[in-house]
Length: 292
Image (tube, helix red, strand yellow):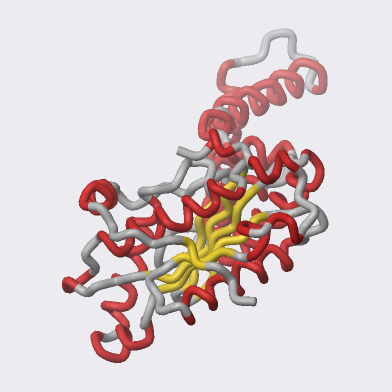
């Protein structure tokens, strides 16, 4: 049985204008969700807390100098000069600790970000998908998974060069980022393939998102006036799914969209024929009011 295609109407001019006006997207969702709850990591996440390490270092060093002169040396009055060297050392220690924490925060961010598009990389998407599966299984919340890639991308690279190919990927990143919610998790899976995790999205919301992505890219002129289109596959989390199964169904839908002629969105059977799967009513309804 072939997977049914989602209807793909002609893109509207308003979609193209909206996509063109959007700047490069911010990293959607909680990119720092992988951060450990350790207190040092929490400090590193806060610029204010990081900056406070400098006066804290000064205070601790001066307190140590006062205790040393008052109790170890038995001095009733501690001279001001006794605080100069420890104070400078404390300031230096605070600056060093702050620098290390800033470097830690930057390194963690780089580990999650794709070098070209500046959105999530595959490792970050895998982690976010595993978290969303656990959350949906525990609380009965639906989510949609959208997978898409660039039509004839190899031809673009072979004909126009890899620089143009990279610009096409950046163009698609900007365009698709402009139609997503802040809670949607958007990343590059690898090559010309991208993934979107849409929390709180059920059947009709997932299908609408897939079509919105396809239409936005088709309506937006690509680099060097190339006609850039994408093929989109969409699946929905159902009870008993793990990350691999929901991703596999989205891939199957993507291949069906390719076989159907490209520049189209296709869905797996669970989005059209809910009778074949035991999907609870709340997942079929899917919190559709949450989608814009």
